[in-house]
Length: 372
Image (cartoon, rainbow, N blue to C red):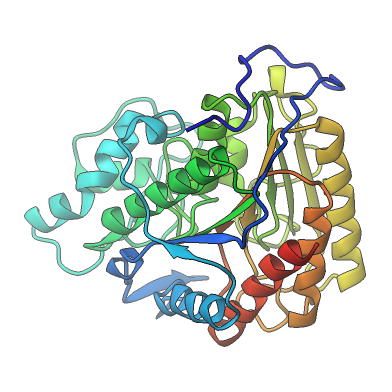
């Protein structure tokens, strides 16, 4: 299969005008790669602002999106092709992946039951460079909140999601213009060696790195989830070949709180290749779209060879844990604006917790993209 952009990797400078030209893209309907294993991750509850509540991140989220995609005849729905761990280990540390793979079984072997929650973390002044032998200590080492339980099926579900992302990359390399990764749990809060925010493997980051490894000199990631993609930023913050832009609730008041400020612009070689556009909770729709236009302008100036979109629709006015004002009728316009970049585009499912509306909102974005 021909690579999307078969040119060698090279050093890239901000403002570099060269870019490989992608031609002969297919105009067929968007293909969805669906993670049928997602329901194996079914948390009984979570801790939200210190209170034990039913889990917001639940299998019905993907079920409703799948039903909406089928009803809208969005395009062919495919199962993922199995890939080995090599692409995952380009993004996540081996120690973390090894822990995640066996964590719940180890928890049960130690007498645990049900879902496993972290309860202690290495805060400032404590060491995080030594992996403890104690299971609870390792849970804390590799996580950052108490709202992301490890279930018996977490690894199977998130690992299948990585296969979905890599299959979508394969399709772009085969000539598709747009693909949609329909998976859960989501991924953009997962960093190189930590989970949290319902996320365990970062599917958008895995896809972006796989696109680079298949020959793209530059890849852009656009995160439109209500919550900052702190894991994605963590992975690529010192890189100049992958540009990251995120529109999200202001971390002064909104989860994940400790990352996502406007002054975080990248470091080292990555200086200038990270764009955070935080907005106040309750910001009106026109302000959100103004931020989107700014992000798309920066992405266009970067001249990427492909785009990965972390597609969260918790920007919806009815979302139970978020505070933006987008209506269902606004989502096609989001897709239309993204399509104007005229880039091979991979959409990866992230957040969105108003279950009854999530399908229409996601399909709105994808249909808008297709129409444009």
